[in-house]
Length: 224
Image (tube, rainbow, N blue to C red):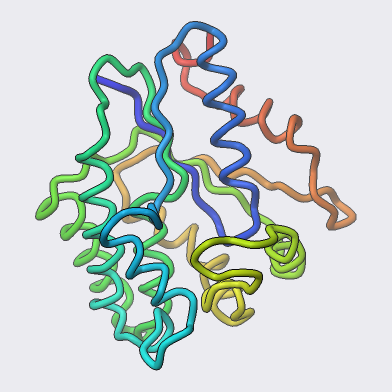
């Protein structure tokens, strides 16, 4: 069975960069690795997810009710994960996974409903859709101002053009999600590792330094 690693955090934390660095490092050591990013905006369902996130239409990922939006993300993940050839892999590295859906959508329901919503969503993805629990979640943290600055540097993307998506553009959502990751982590059976991506002065730590910390936190027997 492949060891499954999922990279999480608010937007602009460098998850994709770190997933790629770890993929390349493990591959260079002789491991067979598969990397997937969610959502896959080139997939049939992912294209519609991209439209909802772009904010171009009257119904968006910020106005559609949380359960309905969660179903869009879950359906796209189910399709993409099960279409991938995981045979013979030592590692599956995931840039966003089920926890992203739980965090971003639970923050859009009333506070007293969040625990029940999180349990519903985890049951949906892991039990009804049968997606495996990751062995380890790496949760990357930056403050909201640094997140916004990093998102602004992403440049043109197919699903949003030059603009942030509706979640990236909302400081309120980013603040709520950042606070929620530790709370949501207690609901998962997966091991969770929190990585601070900021220096004491609030600037971004070098990518290679963060990557070394990630690699050092791989369980014994999975880092050599």
